[in-house]
Image (cartoon, rainbow, N blue to C red; front, top):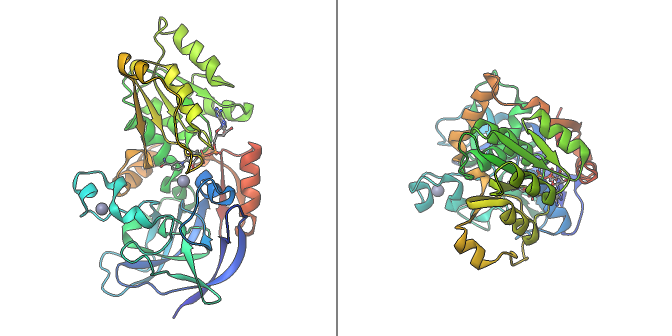
Length: 374
Ligand SMILES: NC(=O)c1ccc[n+]([C@@H]2O[C@H](COP(=O)([O-])OP(=O)(O)OC[C@H]3O[C@@H](n4cnc5c(N)ncnc54)[C@H](O)[C@@H]3O)[C@@H](O)[C@H]2O)c1
Ligand SMILES: [Zn+2]
Ligand SMILES: [Zn+2]
């Protein structure tokens, strides 16, 4: 029997999240229904409000960073039971497509309908409905809902002794930022790393850079509170803008520049990337993790400089991680006291306060806001 659930949806972009009661389908084969415990307020769901990211279907139920408890399991769906604790991965991983077969699970073909919100194998198949109209599910999971139904490729079972509120954050922000540093930046012990933009993603790039062995981690953010937080998470220095950070990095590397720079600005532009390229040394790497206007084209860098200095710009989705590998791994690190999770949460919200949570994000008062369900 389909159930009714409250959920935060967006009807158009630009637009604002509003709470509605919608109809949620039962899980089909290889699907589960989950009662959400918590959902992080990642900037990517705000791109839907501003229209930076244009969706393939409206209305859309937002949210892609969540955790909860399985309440129903589809027929012939082995490996899952009612009562299982799960973290959602914002990218599904099928294990069989060309990308998965290469070991690039974060590039799985089944992620293609992420911004349509239908099932991966059938673009016309939706699990949420409002007054007879199909509602998309952000990333196929839509964690801004009391209950959601998702494919098991987007679901990672976790041990029951891990608090679900903190676990929600390893659905997107933590692995994305951490992996941007540990997998994508080529950090080696002793390196100097710049992290540009200290929100929910950048703060985890700071943690990741320290884990990867960086000696100097330079955080850049115009908001003083963000710079303070960065120091608590392992940044050794912090600056309000990238020009100051670049000058400092050069001053401690005999003029060479940072070994790598990770761009995690909320609304990333080509200009930000150009600034990061100017901050790194010969042979250095810029990791591009932040996103901005989908339609924007162009990065102001000198092709000549790229060649002569052999610099690299590396795009990074999900920090280059394999979701089913990284989520349990990060949670083990959390349990061992090696990874900060509670400290990421600045403020808790109800489902009705999603839009307010994003206003606070823009005001610069949150590292991560989180919706907590009853
Ligand atoms: N690639 C991926 O897999 C992936 C996954 C999740 C999120 N993202 C993207 O990462 C970005 C960051 O997300 P978030 O949730 O951390 O956002 P956020 O809004 O919490 O943080 C962004 C930070 O950038 C700072 N900032 C703004 N302008 C700046 C500038 N010129 N220099 C330095 N800092 C500046 C802001 O003050 C803020 O602290 C977003 O674009 C988001 O969509 C990418
Ligand atoms: Zn996210
Ligand atoms: Zn795949």
